[in-house]
Image 1: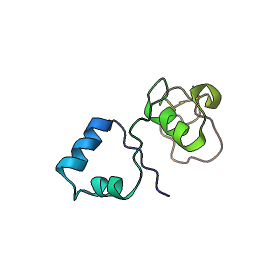
Image 2 (image 1 turned 180 degrees about the vertical axis):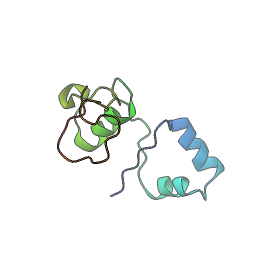
Image 3 (image 1 turned 180 degrees about the horizontal axis):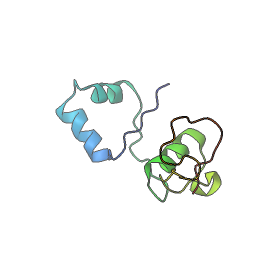
Image 4 (image 1 turned 90 degrees about the vertical axis):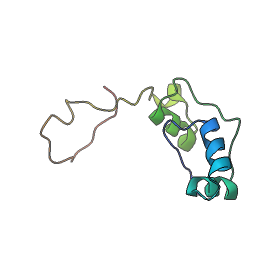
Length: 91
């Protein structure tokens, strides 16, 4: 199974690619797979929370991820060269 998420791609853009560029790799993937034409984004419609919905089934309320902001300078201060240890994605 291949799950593809393209940040910023809307259904009308995908429809255009399939019509105008049928040999384009993305159009061929659509032709050989399943395209959900009535899918809806969770609110807020931000990339990372939206992808979490696709892969976990959990919405922003249940996952606790509402925005793409995942940077916490207390966990990785400027100049960090090694990313060892644990940490969360919340500010």
